[in-house]
Length: 133
Image 1: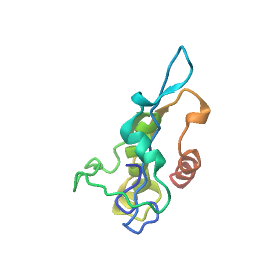
Image 2 (image 1 turned 120 degrees about the horizontal axis):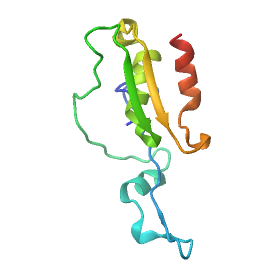
Image 3 (image 1 turned 120 degrees about the vertical axis):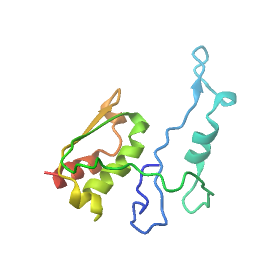
Image 4 (image 1 turned 90 degrees about the vertical axis):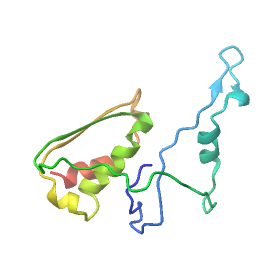
């Protein structure tokens, strides 16, 4: 899940997911093997706008700030592993939350991707960087 509990629209009714389609390309034929396709990632990638999808998950779980608001936060992610940190960074820098007003430390996001094209949410991260300065 890549959004906070308020959702990207801040309406409490939306959720953003960070999903990468998993498919296996046969190294000999160069053709995708549908028998090895990722069930969940392909289902989610095939969902169309306005499709209804039932979602269930842990309730009441959230990333918490350190008790000292001046403590620095270091987050490490690769690729789609950025999802929970995107939500956390939204709480710190984009939404009008208590966390945003209390946090006085530095937030570091160490994100590894193999190519620049694999960098997800760059415009958002740039906006957060500007709002946090």
